Length: 135
Image 1 (tube, helix red, strand yellow):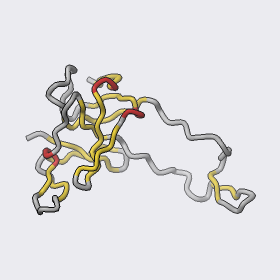
Image 2 (cartoon, one colour):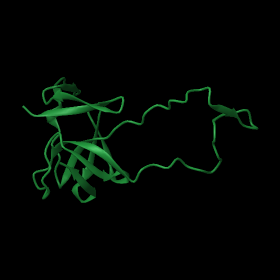
Image 3 (cartoon, rainbow, N blue to C red):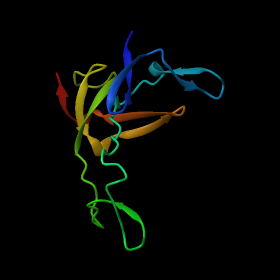
Image 4 (tube, helix red, strand yellow):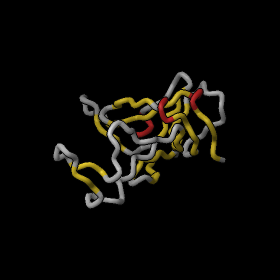
């Protein structure tokens, strides 16, 4: 039985392929193994952003009376990593790389696509955007 994972608090937690994700409008249960990627796509899990450890106490009040994080500079955007580590859940049969379920890989973060699959967010990436495999 293959296993799939969910992200909780920045960690990968494992569930089986028979885990029910939800129900279709006709009442049929949708399991984790119901989504099969095609056209060289990989179904992956990406980590959720971790909550700030600084909390509300590290804030400042702007001239307009809006609470801003300490060190906030107007016009400056948060720097995000170009590549992120994700966990492979399923692989299209036409992928040429050696990817397996539960394997961790690095991908171009800007190329991740989200598909709404019966209310469950499925994250896919084209095989071209895999930057590295973690053995």
